[in-house]
Amino acid sequence: MTSSDSISRAIHAYLDRGNSKYAIMIDGPWGVGKTHFIWHSIIPGRAATSFVYTSLYGLSSFDEIDIEIDAQIEAIQSKRNKSVGTELHSLPRIEKEAVGMSHYSDNTRRVPTSTSDSGSDHSVVVCLDDLERWHGDLHLCLSYINRLVEHKNLKCILIGNLEEMPPSAVYAFSSAREKTIRHIYRYESDYRKIIGISLDLVDYSSKASKSFIRSIIKKNFSSFERLLDQATVRNIRIIAEALQLYEYIYRHNSMHFKLSRGMAFTYFLTLFSALILVTRYLVERKDRDELLKGNHAGNKGFKFLVNMGYFEDQKTGVVTPKIRLLLDTVFYRLDQISLKGLFSIVRNGYYIKADFEGDFDSWVNEQHYDSYLDKDNYYQLADDDARQVFESMLSSLFDSCDITNPVTLMLLAERIIDDIACGVVDYNPVEFKKLFIDSVDSLYASGDMQYKEINIFDVDCNRFANCRDIYSYMQEQNSSYHRAAQKMKLDSFWSLISKTPSNIDSLLEKFDPQAVFSQTIQSEEIIEALESLDNSRLYQVVKWIEAGFDDQSGKDLYYIDPYALKSVNEDIRSRFGTQIGVRANHLRQIAEIIAQFR
Image (cartoon, rainbow, N blue to C red; front, side, top):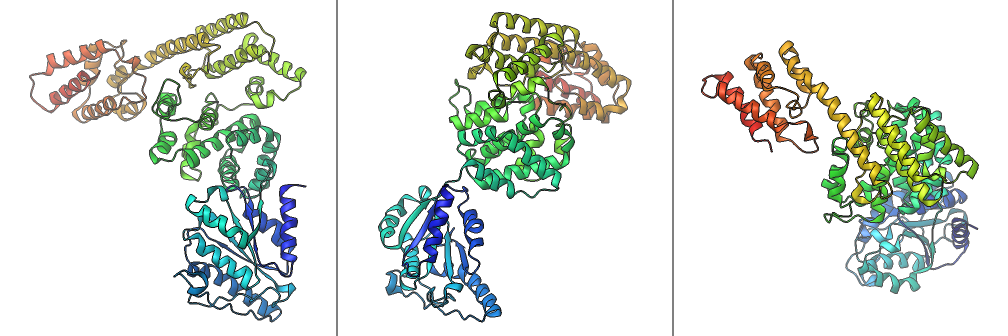
Protein backbone atom coordinates (compact mmCIF):
# COMPACT_ATOMS: atom_id res chain seq x y z
CA MET A 1 0.00 0.00 0.00
CA THR A 2 1.40 3.40 -0.93
CA SER A 3 1.71 6.31 1.49
CA SER A 4 -1.19 8.13 -0.14
CA ASP A 5 -3.41 5.02 0.00
CA SER A 6 -2.72 4.58 3.70
CA ILE A 7 -3.40 8.25 4.46
CA SER A 8 -6.56 8.17 2.37
CA ARG A 9 -7.95 5.28 4.43
CA ALA A 10 -7.04 7.08 7.67
CA ILE A 11 -8.73 10.32 6.61
CA HIS A 12 -11.93 8.60 5.49
CA ALA A 13 -12.04 6.68 8.78
CA TYR A 14 -11.65 9.97 10.68
CA LEU A 15 -14.39 11.68 8.69
CA ASP A 16 -16.77 8.73 9.11
CA ARG A 17 -16.51 8.75 12.91
CA GLY A 18 -19.47 10.37 14.63
CA ASN A 19 -17.59 11.77 17.63
CA SER A 20 -13.91 12.61 17.21
CA LYS A 21 -12.94 15.69 19.19
CA TYR A 22 -9.54 16.14 17.65
CA ALA A 23 -7.93 17.28 14.44
CA ILE A 24 -5.62 15.35 12.16
CA MET A 25 -2.71 16.64 10.14
CA ILE A 26 -0.97 15.84 6.86
CA ASP A 27 2.72 16.68 7.06
CA GLY A 28 5.19 16.75 4.18
CA PRO A 29 7.70 18.85 2.22
CA TRP A 30 6.56 21.91 0.32
CA GLY A 31 5.16 21.22 -3.11
CA VAL A 32 5.06 17.45 -2.68
CA GLY A 33 1.33 17.35 -3.44
CA LYS A 34 -0.42 17.39 -0.04
CA THR A 35 -3.09 19.91 -1.06
CA HIS A 36 -3.45 18.27 -4.47
CA PHE A 37 -4.04 14.98 -2.63
CA ILE A 38 -6.91 16.47 -0.62
CA TRP A 39 -8.56 18.09 -3.64
CA HIS A 40 -8.15 15.19 -6.04
CA SER A 41 -8.11 12.05 -3.88
CA ILE A 42 -10.25 12.84 -0.82
CA ILE A 43 -12.86 15.42 -1.84
CA PRO A 44 -14.11 13.63 -5.02
CA GLY A 45 -14.93 10.55 -2.90
CA ARG A 46 -17.18 12.48 -0.50
CA ALA A 47 -19.88 14.11 -2.59
CA ALA A 48 -22.12 14.79 0.44
CA THR A 49 -19.38 16.53 2.43
CA SER A 50 -18.62 20.23 2.12
CA PHE A 51 -14.96 21.13 2.52
CA VAL A 52 -14.10 24.64 3.73
CA TYR A 53 -10.50 25.25 2.69
CA THR A 54 -8.36 28.13 4.00
CA SER A 55 -4.65 28.85 3.78
CA LEU A 56 -3.12 30.22 6.96
CA TYR A 57 -0.28 31.76 4.97
CA GLY A 58 0.36 35.23 6.44
CA LEU A 59 -2.67 35.19 8.75
CA SER A 60 -2.22 36.09 12.42
CA SER A 61 -5.66 36.49 14.09
CA PHE A 62 -9.11 34.96 14.41
CA ASP A 63 -10.60 37.81 12.40
CA GLU A 64 -8.42 36.98 9.42
CA ILE A 65 -9.37 33.31 9.54
CA ASP A 66 -13.04 34.30 9.81
CA ILE A 67 -12.83 36.48 6.73
CA GLU A 68 -11.28 33.64 4.74
CA ILE A 69 -13.84 31.09 5.92
CA ASP A 70 -16.99 33.22 5.88
CA ALA A 71 -17.11 33.57 2.11
CA GLN A 72 -16.90 29.80 1.63
CA ILE A 73 -19.47 29.10 4.33
CA GLU A 74 -21.92 31.52 2.74
CA ALA A 75 -21.45 29.82 -0.61
CA ILE A 76 -22.06 26.42 0.97
CA GLN A 77 -25.15 27.70 2.79
CA SER A 78 -26.57 29.25 -0.36
CA LYS A 79 -26.01 26.07 -2.34
CA ARG A 80 -27.62 23.88 0.32
CA ASN A 81 -30.60 26.14 0.84
CA LYS A 82 -31.30 26.03 -2.88
CA SER A 83 -30.94 22.26 -3.09
CA VAL A 84 -32.35 20.78 0.13
CA GLY A 85 -33.26 23.71 2.34
CA THR A 86 -30.77 22.80 5.07
CA GLU A 87 -30.19 25.65 7.56
CA LEU A 88 -26.69 26.22 8.92
CA HIS A 89 -26.46 27.33 12.50
CA SER A 90 -24.14 30.04 13.74
CA LEU A 91 -21.18 29.42 15.97
CA PRO A 92 -20.91 31.99 18.80
CA ARG A 93 -17.85 34.19 18.82
CA ILE A 94 -14.77 32.94 20.63
CA GLU A 95 -14.37 35.17 23.66
CA LYS A 96 -11.13 36.43 25.16
CA GLU A 97 -11.52 34.26 28.27
CA ALA A 98 -11.78 31.08 26.19
CA VAL A 99 -8.28 31.35 24.83
CA GLY A 100 -6.51 33.73 27.17
CA MET A 101 -5.59 36.07 24.32
CA SER A 102 -6.66 39.53 23.29
CA HIS A 103 -7.35 38.57 19.65
CA TYR A 104 -10.88 37.32 19.08
CA SER A 105 -13.67 37.67 16.57
CA ASP A 106 -16.52 40.13 17.04
CA ASN A 107 -18.44 38.42 14.24
CA THR A 108 -20.47 35.24 14.20
CA ARG A 109 -19.35 32.65 11.71
CA ARG A 110 -21.81 30.72 9.58
CA VAL A 111 -20.66 27.17 10.33
CA PRO A 112 -22.65 24.23 11.71
CA THR A 113 -22.60 23.78 15.48
CA SER A 114 -21.70 20.14 14.97
CA THR A 115 -21.44 17.64 12.21
CA SER A 116 -24.32 15.65 13.65
CA ASP A 117 -26.63 18.69 13.67
CA SER A 118 -26.47 18.88 9.94
CA GLY A 119 -26.83 15.19 9.45
CA SER A 120 -24.23 12.78 8.09
CA ASP A 121 -25.27 13.63 4.55
CA HIS A 122 -24.38 17.28 5.03
CA SER A 123 -21.17 17.37 7.08
CA VAL A 124 -18.64 20.20 6.86
CA VAL A 125 -14.91 19.67 7.08
CA VAL A 126 -12.54 22.57 7.74
CA CYS A 127 -9.15 22.27 5.99
CA LEU A 128 -6.47 24.66 7.23
CA ASP A 129 -3.41 24.66 4.98
CA ASP A 130 0.11 26.11 5.42
CA LEU A 131 0.18 25.79 9.20
CA GLU A 132 3.92 26.52 9.30
CA ARG A 133 3.26 29.84 7.53
CA TRP A 134 0.87 31.18 10.19
CA HIS A 135 2.31 34.55 11.21
CA GLY A 136 0.68 34.96 14.59
CA ASP A 137 1.11 33.24 17.93
CA LEU A 138 0.73 29.51 17.34
CA HIS A 139 -1.04 29.07 20.70
CA LEU A 140 -3.78 31.31 19.34
CA CYS A 141 -4.12 29.30 16.14
CA LEU A 142 -4.19 25.96 17.94
CA SER A 143 -6.75 27.31 20.43
CA TYR A 144 -8.97 28.19 17.47
CA ILE A 145 -8.61 24.65 16.12
CA ASN A 146 -9.31 23.16 19.54
CA ARG A 147 -12.50 25.21 19.79
CA LEU A 148 -13.68 23.80 16.46
CA VAL A 149 -12.97 20.14 17.17
CA GLU A 150 -13.58 19.83 20.90
CA HIS A 151 -16.34 22.31 21.70
CA LYS A 152 -18.20 22.23 18.39
CA ASN A 153 -17.41 18.67 17.31
CA LEU A 154 -16.25 19.72 13.83
CA LYS A 155 -13.83 17.82 11.65
CA CYS A 156 -10.57 19.63 10.96
CA ILE A 157 -7.72 18.61 8.66
CA LEU A 158 -4.46 20.53 9.01
CA ILE A 159 -1.90 20.59 6.21
CA GLY A 160 1.67 21.75 6.66
CA ASN A 161 5.40 21.16 6.63
CA LEU A 162 6.66 20.67 10.17
CA GLU A 163 10.27 20.72 9.02
CA GLU A 164 9.82 24.38 8.04
CA MET A 165 8.04 25.44 11.22
CA PRO A 166 9.83 28.38 12.92
CA PRO A 167 11.86 27.34 15.99
CA SER A 168 9.80 29.73 18.12
CA ALA A 169 6.65 27.76 17.28
CA VAL A 170 7.96 24.23 17.78
CA TYR A 171 7.35 24.17 21.54
CA ALA A 172 3.82 25.54 21.22
CA PHE A 173 3.02 22.93 18.61
CA SER A 174 4.49 20.07 20.67
CA SER A 175 2.59 21.06 23.81
CA ALA A 176 -0.72 21.34 21.96
CA ARG A 177 -0.37 18.26 19.79
CA GLU A 178 -1.61 15.77 22.40
CA LYS A 179 -4.71 17.81 23.17
CA THR A 180 -5.71 19.03 19.70
CA ILE A 181 -3.98 17.03 16.95
CA ARG A 182 -4.34 13.29 17.53
CA HIS A 183 -2.68 11.91 14.39
CA ILE A 184 -0.02 13.30 12.06
CA TYR A 185 0.39 11.49 8.77
CA ARG A 186 3.59 11.93 6.77
CA TYR A 187 2.75 12.39 3.10
CA GLU A 188 5.46 11.35 0.66
CA SER A 189 4.94 11.00 -3.07
CA ASP A 190 7.27 9.00 -5.24
CA TYR A 191 8.75 10.77 -8.26
CA ARG A 192 6.45 8.99 -10.68
CA LYS A 193 3.40 10.47 -8.96
CA ILE A 194 5.03 13.91 -8.56
CA ILE A 195 5.96 14.06 -12.24
CA GLY A 196 2.54 12.76 -13.23
CA ILE A 197 0.76 15.50 -11.26
CA SER A 198 3.14 18.10 -12.70
CA LEU A 199 2.38 16.97 -16.24
CA ASP A 200 -1.35 17.26 -15.52
CA LEU A 201 -0.94 20.90 -14.46
CA VAL A 202 0.54 22.01 -17.79
CA ASP A 203 -1.64 24.11 -20.11
CA TYR A 204 -0.95 22.32 -23.39
CA SER A 205 -1.54 24.22 -26.62
CA SER A 206 -2.51 21.08 -28.55
CA LYS A 207 -2.85 17.31 -28.34
CA ALA A 208 0.41 17.02 -30.28
CA SER A 209 2.20 19.15 -27.71
CA LYS A 210 0.81 17.08 -24.84
CA SER A 211 1.73 13.83 -26.56
CA PHE A 212 5.29 14.92 -27.35
CA ILE A 213 6.15 16.23 -23.90
CA ARG A 214 4.64 13.27 -22.09
CA SER A 215 6.40 10.83 -24.41
CA ILE A 216 9.91 12.26 -23.95
CA ILE A 217 9.43 12.46 -20.18
CA LYS A 218 8.23 8.85 -20.14
CA LYS A 219 11.11 7.65 -22.33
CA ASN A 220 13.70 9.48 -20.20
CA PHE A 221 11.95 9.09 -16.87
CA SER A 222 14.91 7.50 -15.07
CA SER A 223 17.23 10.34 -16.14
CA PHE A 224 14.79 12.98 -14.94
CA GLU A 225 14.11 11.10 -11.72
CA ARG A 226 17.85 10.85 -11.05
CA LEU A 227 18.32 14.60 -11.46
CA LEU A 228 15.33 15.32 -9.20
CA ASP A 229 16.70 12.95 -6.58
CA GLN A 230 20.27 14.30 -6.68
CA ALA A 231 19.03 17.89 -6.53
CA THR A 232 16.40 16.90 -3.89
CA VAL A 233 13.58 18.56 -5.81
CA ARG A 234 10.10 17.25 -5.03
CA ASN A 235 8.16 20.47 -5.50
CA ILE A 236 5.30 19.95 -7.94
CA ARG A 237 4.90 23.69 -8.56
CA ILE A 238 8.50 24.15 -9.73
CA ILE A 239 8.44 21.01 -11.88
CA ALA A 240 5.13 22.03 -13.43
CA GLU A 241 6.51 25.53 -14.11
CA ALA A 242 9.54 24.05 -15.91
CA LEU A 243 7.25 21.84 -18.00
CA GLN A 244 5.00 24.81 -18.82
CA LEU A 245 7.92 26.97 -19.98
CA TYR A 246 9.15 24.02 -22.03
CA GLU A 247 5.72 23.70 -23.63
CA TYR A 248 5.83 27.36 -24.65
CA ILE A 249 9.15 26.74 -26.39
CA TYR A 250 7.98 23.51 -28.02
CA ARG A 251 4.84 25.03 -29.54
CA HIS A 252 7.04 27.52 -31.47
CA ASN A 253 9.83 25.09 -32.39
CA SER A 254 8.13 21.71 -32.70
CA MET A 255 9.84 20.70 -35.94
CA HIS A 256 13.31 21.11 -34.42
CA PHE A 257 12.31 19.21 -31.29
CA LYS A 258 10.84 16.32 -33.29
CA LEU A 259 14.05 16.18 -35.33
CA SER A 260 16.15 15.30 -32.30
CA ARG A 261 14.15 13.97 -29.38
CA GLY A 262 17.29 13.19 -27.40
CA MET A 263 18.50 16.77 -27.68
CA ALA A 264 14.98 17.99 -26.93
CA PHE A 265 15.05 16.16 -23.60
CA THR A 266 18.57 17.41 -22.82
CA TYR A 267 17.24 20.91 -23.51
CA PHE A 268 14.47 20.33 -20.97
CA LEU A 269 16.99 19.26 -18.30
CA THR A 270 18.98 22.42 -19.03
CA LEU A 271 15.85 24.55 -18.67
CA PHE A 272 14.80 22.77 -15.49
CA SER A 273 18.25 23.15 -13.89
CA ALA A 274 18.36 26.86 -14.71
CA LEU A 275 14.92 27.34 -13.15
CA ILE A 276 15.93 25.51 -9.96
CA LEU A 277 19.07 27.64 -9.68
CA VAL A 278 17.18 30.94 -9.88
CA THR A 279 14.24 29.89 -7.71
CA ARG A 280 16.08 28.04 -4.97
CA TYR A 281 19.79 28.85 -4.84
CA LEU A 282 20.51 32.24 -6.40
CA VAL A 283 18.89 34.32 -3.69
CA GLU A 284 20.47 37.65 -4.61
CA ARG A 285 19.06 39.41 -7.65
CA LYS A 286 22.55 40.24 -8.94
CA ASP A 287 23.40 36.52 -8.96
CA ARG A 288 20.25 35.67 -10.89
CA ASP A 289 20.91 38.47 -13.36
CA GLU A 290 24.50 37.35 -13.81
CA LEU A 291 23.31 33.89 -14.80
CA LEU A 292 20.32 34.89 -16.90
CA LYS A 293 21.74 38.05 -18.49
CA GLY A 294 25.44 37.25 -18.64
CA ASN A 295 27.44 37.07 -21.84
CA HIS A 296 28.05 33.33 -21.55
CA ALA A 297 28.66 32.94 -25.28
CA GLY A 298 31.46 35.50 -25.16
CA ASN A 299 33.15 34.53 -21.90
CA LYS A 300 32.23 30.82 -22.05
CA GLY A 301 30.44 31.07 -18.71
CA PHE A 302 33.77 31.37 -16.92
CA LYS A 303 33.12 34.81 -15.40
CA PHE A 304 29.84 33.70 -13.85
CA LEU A 305 31.31 30.41 -12.64
CA VAL A 306 34.34 32.13 -11.11
CA ASN A 307 32.05 34.52 -9.23
CA MET A 308 29.99 31.56 -8.06
CA GLY A 309 33.13 29.89 -6.69
CA TYR A 310 32.73 26.96 -9.05
CA PHE A 311 36.43 26.36 -9.65
CA GLU A 312 38.38 24.69 -6.90
CA ASP A 313 41.03 27.39 -6.71
CA GLN A 314 38.45 30.16 -6.24
CA LYS A 315 37.25 31.25 -2.79
CA THR A 316 34.75 33.89 -3.89
CA GLY A 317 31.64 31.85 -3.29
CA VAL A 318 30.19 28.64 -1.92
CA VAL A 319 29.11 25.99 -4.41
CA THR A 320 27.40 22.98 -2.89
CA PRO A 321 27.31 19.63 -4.69
CA LYS A 322 23.70 20.33 -5.68
CA ILE A 323 24.54 23.71 -7.18
CA ARG A 324 27.51 22.17 -9.00
CA LEU A 325 25.26 19.46 -10.42
CA LEU A 326 22.77 22.02 -11.71
CA LEU A 327 25.51 24.20 -13.20
CA ASP A 328 27.05 21.18 -14.91
CA THR A 329 23.66 20.34 -16.40
CA VAL A 330 23.05 23.91 -17.61
CA PHE A 331 26.42 24.25 -19.32
CA TYR A 332 26.90 20.63 -20.48
CA ARG A 333 25.83 20.66 -24.15
CA LEU A 334 26.80 24.14 -25.29
CA ASP A 335 27.85 22.54 -28.55
CA GLN A 336 24.15 22.26 -29.44
CA ILE A 337 22.17 24.17 -26.83
CA SER A 338 22.03 27.95 -26.90
CA LEU A 339 21.27 29.55 -23.54
CA LYS A 340 20.06 32.85 -25.02
CA GLY A 341 16.38 32.02 -25.47
CA LEU A 342 16.34 29.53 -22.62
CA PHE A 343 17.50 32.13 -20.11
CA SER A 344 15.07 34.64 -21.61
CA ILE A 345 12.02 32.49 -20.87
CA VAL A 346 13.25 31.63 -17.37
CA ARG A 347 13.80 35.33 -16.72
CA ASN A 348 10.51 36.57 -18.18
CA GLY A 349 8.14 33.62 -17.78
CA TYR A 350 6.86 33.86 -21.35
CA TYR A 351 8.12 33.21 -24.88
CA ILE A 352 9.79 36.05 -26.81
CA LYS A 353 10.31 34.98 -30.41
CA ALA A 354 13.29 37.25 -31.12
CA ASP A 355 15.24 35.81 -28.18
CA PHE A 356 15.10 32.31 -29.66
CA GLU A 357 16.13 33.28 -33.18
CA GLY A 358 18.66 30.77 -34.51
CA ASP A 359 18.82 28.79 -31.26
CA PHE A 360 17.81 25.49 -32.89
CA ASP A 361 19.25 25.91 -36.39
CA SER A 362 22.10 23.46 -35.73
CA TRP A 363 19.83 20.66 -34.51
CA VAL A 364 19.83 17.65 -36.81
CA ASN A 365 18.60 14.09 -36.66
CA GLU A 366 19.97 12.33 -33.60
CA GLN A 367 23.48 11.00 -34.21
CA HIS A 368 25.33 8.08 -32.65
CA TYR A 369 27.50 10.47 -30.68
CA ASP A 370 24.38 12.07 -29.17
CA SER A 371 23.34 8.66 -27.85
CA TYR A 372 26.80 8.15 -26.44
CA LEU A 373 26.92 11.58 -24.77
CA ASP A 374 23.58 10.87 -23.09
CA LYS A 375 25.29 9.11 -20.22
CA ASP A 376 22.16 8.20 -18.26
CA ASN A 377 20.57 6.34 -21.15
CA TYR A 378 23.84 4.91 -22.47
CA TYR A 379 24.66 3.33 -19.11
CA GLN A 380 21.29 1.56 -19.11
CA LEU A 381 21.86 -0.15 -22.45
CA ALA A 382 22.67 -3.84 -22.73
CA ASP A 383 26.38 -4.46 -23.36
CA ASP A 384 25.89 -5.40 -27.02
CA ASP A 385 23.75 -2.32 -27.70
CA ALA A 386 26.20 -0.07 -25.87
CA ARG A 387 29.10 -1.54 -27.85
CA GLN A 388 27.29 -0.88 -31.13
CA VAL A 389 26.62 2.77 -30.18
CA PHE A 390 30.28 3.20 -29.19
CA GLU A 391 31.63 1.67 -32.40
CA SER A 392 29.28 3.75 -34.56
CA MET A 393 30.43 6.86 -32.73
CA LEU A 394 34.10 5.96 -33.32
CA SER A 395 33.40 5.45 -37.01
CA SER A 396 31.92 8.96 -37.24
CA LEU A 397 34.88 10.29 -35.28
CA PHE A 398 37.78 8.67 -37.14
CA ASP A 399 36.56 7.10 -40.39
CA SER A 400 34.10 9.58 -41.91
CA CYS A 401 35.31 12.53 -39.78
CA ASP A 402 31.80 14.03 -39.91
CA ILE A 403 31.90 15.39 -36.34
CA THR A 404 33.20 18.88 -36.98
CA ASN A 405 32.02 20.81 -33.93
CA PRO A 406 35.09 21.35 -31.68
CA VAL A 407 32.95 21.44 -28.52
CA THR A 408 31.30 18.12 -29.40
CA LEU A 409 34.72 16.64 -30.13
CA MET A 410 36.04 17.72 -26.73
CA LEU A 411 32.98 16.35 -24.96
CA LEU A 412 33.47 13.03 -26.72
CA ALA A 413 37.17 12.91 -25.84
CA GLU A 414 36.33 13.52 -22.20
CA ARG A 415 33.68 10.77 -22.14
CA ILE A 416 35.79 8.22 -23.98
CA ILE A 417 38.88 8.70 -21.80
CA ASP A 418 36.74 8.48 -18.65
CA ASP A 419 34.98 5.34 -19.91
CA ILE A 420 38.32 3.74 -20.77
CA ALA A 421 39.62 4.52 -17.27
CA CYS A 422 36.48 3.05 -15.68
CA GLY A 423 36.51 -0.08 -17.85
CA VAL A 424 33.25 0.77 -19.57
CA VAL A 425 34.85 0.37 -23.00
CA ASP A 426 37.86 -1.63 -24.16
CA TYR A 427 40.20 0.75 -25.94
CA ASN A 428 43.85 1.69 -25.67
CA PRO A 429 44.00 5.28 -24.32
CA VAL A 430 47.34 6.05 -25.98
CA GLU A 431 46.08 4.89 -29.36
CA PHE A 432 42.84 6.84 -28.91
CA LYS A 433 44.64 10.09 -28.12
CA LYS A 434 46.89 9.73 -31.16
CA LEU A 435 43.98 9.06 -33.50
CA PHE A 436 42.00 11.91 -31.96
CA ILE A 437 44.81 14.45 -32.40
CA ASP A 438 45.39 13.31 -36.00
CA SER A 439 41.68 13.70 -36.76
CA VAL A 440 41.54 17.15 -35.17
CA ASP A 441 44.63 18.29 -37.11
CA SER A 442 43.07 17.07 -40.34
CA LEU A 443 39.86 19.01 -39.73
CA TYR A 444 41.70 22.23 -38.91
CA ALA A 445 44.08 21.87 -41.85
CA SER A 446 41.28 21.25 -44.35
CA GLY A 447 39.16 24.09 -42.97
CA ASP A 448 36.30 21.66 -42.25
CA MET A 449 36.26 22.39 -38.51
CA GLN A 450 33.38 24.62 -37.50
CA TYR A 451 34.21 28.09 -36.21
CA LYS A 452 33.09 27.72 -32.61
CA GLU A 453 34.59 28.53 -29.25
CA ILE A 454 35.13 25.57 -26.97
CA ASN A 455 32.51 26.67 -24.48
CA ILE A 456 33.09 24.11 -21.76
CA PHE A 457 34.56 24.37 -18.28
CA ASP A 458 38.23 25.00 -17.71
CA VAL A 459 40.67 22.39 -16.38
CA ASP A 460 40.81 24.17 -13.02
CA CYS A 461 37.76 22.22 -11.92
CA ASN A 462 39.55 18.93 -12.72
CA ARG A 463 36.84 17.99 -15.15
CA PHE A 464 39.47 16.98 -17.73
CA ALA A 465 41.81 15.26 -15.28
CA ASN A 466 42.25 12.27 -17.61
CA CYS A 467 42.64 14.25 -20.82
CA ARG A 468 44.19 17.61 -20.00
CA ASP A 469 46.72 17.16 -22.79
CA ILE A 470 43.90 16.84 -25.35
CA TYR A 471 42.00 19.76 -23.84
CA SER A 472 45.05 22.06 -23.90
CA TYR A 473 45.90 21.04 -27.45
CA MET A 474 42.33 21.63 -28.62
CA GLN A 475 42.21 25.05 -26.98
CA GLU A 476 45.49 26.10 -28.61
CA GLN A 477 44.54 24.80 -32.05
CA ASN A 478 41.08 26.30 -31.89
CA SER A 479 42.41 29.70 -30.85
CA SER A 480 44.89 29.74 -33.74
CA TYR A 481 42.16 28.64 -36.13
CA HIS A 482 39.88 31.44 -34.96
CA ARG A 483 42.59 34.08 -35.07
CA ALA A 484 43.46 33.21 -38.65
CA ALA A 485 39.81 33.30 -39.71
CA GLN A 486 39.09 36.48 -37.80
CA LYS A 487 42.11 38.28 -39.24
CA MET A 488 40.96 37.49 -42.74
CA LYS A 489 37.61 39.02 -41.89
CA LEU A 490 39.11 42.05 -40.12
CA ASP A 491 41.36 42.81 -43.07
CA SER A 492 38.31 43.94 -44.97
CA PHE A 493 36.98 46.49 -42.44
CA TRP A 494 39.10 49.53 -43.25
CA SER A 495 39.05 48.87 -47.00
CA LEU A 496 35.24 48.64 -46.85
CA ILE A 497 35.15 51.95 -44.95
CA SER A 498 37.12 53.58 -47.76
CA LYS A 499 35.12 51.99 -50.57
CA THR A 500 31.62 52.33 -49.15
CA PRO A 501 31.50 55.03 -46.45
CA SER A 502 27.72 55.21 -46.91
CA ASN A 503 27.47 51.72 -45.34
CA ILE A 504 29.02 52.94 -42.10
CA ASP A 505 26.01 51.93 -39.95
CA SER A 506 26.05 48.27 -41.00
CA LEU A 507 29.85 48.06 -40.77
CA LEU A 508 29.96 49.44 -37.24
CA GLU A 509 27.27 46.97 -36.22
CA LYS A 510 29.06 44.02 -37.81
CA PHE A 511 32.61 44.59 -36.51
CA ASP A 512 34.13 44.99 -33.04
CA PRO A 513 35.87 48.34 -32.29
CA GLN A 514 38.83 46.67 -30.61
CA ALA A 515 39.34 43.81 -33.04
CA VAL A 516 39.68 46.04 -36.11
CA PHE A 517 43.05 47.22 -34.79
CA SER A 518 44.72 43.91 -35.56
CA GLN A 519 48.36 43.39 -36.44
CA THR A 520 47.53 42.63 -40.08
CA ILE A 521 46.44 46.22 -40.73
CA GLN A 522 48.91 48.97 -41.59
CA SER A 523 48.57 52.37 -39.95
CA GLU A 524 48.45 54.13 -43.34
CA GLU A 525 45.37 52.12 -44.37
CA ILE A 526 43.52 53.06 -41.17
CA ILE A 527 44.34 56.77 -41.49
CA GLU A 528 43.29 56.73 -45.14
CA ALA A 529 39.94 55.13 -44.26
CA LEU A 530 39.29 57.65 -41.48
CA GLU A 531 40.10 60.56 -43.76
CA SER A 532 37.61 59.29 -46.36
CA LEU A 533 34.71 59.93 -43.96
CA ASP A 534 32.86 63.21 -43.60
CA ASN A 535 32.63 64.75 -40.13
CA SER A 536 29.25 63.23 -39.35
CA ARG A 537 30.39 59.66 -40.09
CA LEU A 538 33.77 60.27 -38.47
CA TYR A 539 31.96 61.33 -35.28
CA GLN A 540 30.05 58.01 -35.40
CA VAL A 541 33.34 56.16 -35.54
CA VAL A 542 34.69 58.14 -32.57
CA LYS A 543 31.70 57.18 -30.39
CA TRP A 544 31.84 53.56 -31.61
CA ILE A 545 35.54 53.22 -30.74
CA GLU A 546 35.03 54.97 -27.41
CA ALA A 547 32.23 52.60 -26.37
CA GLY A 548 34.17 49.54 -27.52
CA PHE A 549 37.36 50.40 -25.65
CA ASP A 550 35.45 51.28 -22.49
CA ASP A 551 33.90 47.79 -22.40
CA GLN A 552 36.56 45.06 -22.31
CA SER A 553 34.55 42.53 -20.32
CA GLY A 554 34.19 39.06 -21.78
CA LYS A 555 36.01 39.94 -25.04
CA ASP A 556 38.80 38.14 -26.79
CA LEU A 557 41.53 40.80 -26.89
CA TYR A 558 44.19 38.73 -28.60
CA TYR A 559 43.22 40.24 -31.97
CA ILE A 560 44.48 43.65 -30.90
CA ASP A 561 48.07 44.53 -31.73
CA PRO A 562 49.49 47.11 -29.26
CA TYR A 563 52.06 48.11 -31.87
CA ALA A 564 49.30 48.85 -34.38
CA LEU A 565 47.55 51.02 -31.79
CA LYS A 566 50.78 52.85 -31.04
CA SER A 567 51.49 53.41 -34.72
CA VAL A 568 47.99 54.78 -35.44
CA ASN A 569 48.17 57.03 -32.36
CA GLU A 570 51.53 58.46 -33.40
CA ASP A 571 50.48 59.00 -37.04
CA ILE A 572 47.29 60.83 -36.04
CA ARG A 573 49.14 63.10 -33.59
CA SER A 574 51.88 63.79 -36.17
CA ARG A 575 49.41 64.78 -38.87
CA PHE A 576 46.60 66.42 -36.91
CA GLY A 577 48.14 67.34 -33.56
CA THR A 578 48.33 71.07 -34.32
CA GLN A 579 45.45 71.43 -36.75
CA ILE A 580 42.35 73.41 -35.82
CA GLY A 581 38.82 72.27 -36.58
CA VAL A 582 36.11 69.71 -35.83
CA ARG A 583 37.65 67.08 -38.09
CA ALA A 584 41.08 67.28 -36.53
CA ASN A 585 39.50 67.12 -33.06
CA HIS A 586 37.63 63.89 -33.98
CA LEU A 587 40.85 62.25 -35.12
CA ARG A 588 42.76 63.36 -32.01
CA GLN A 589 39.97 61.85 -29.88
CA ILE A 590 40.51 58.50 -31.59
CA ALA A 591 44.24 58.74 -30.87
CA GLU A 592 43.56 59.52 -27.21
CA ILE A 593 41.10 56.63 -26.80
CA ILE A 594 43.35 53.94 -28.25
CA ALA A 595 46.38 55.32 -26.37
CA GLN A 596 44.65 54.43 -23.07
CA PHE A 597 44.27 50.76 -23.97
CA ARG A 598 46.14 48.38 -21.67
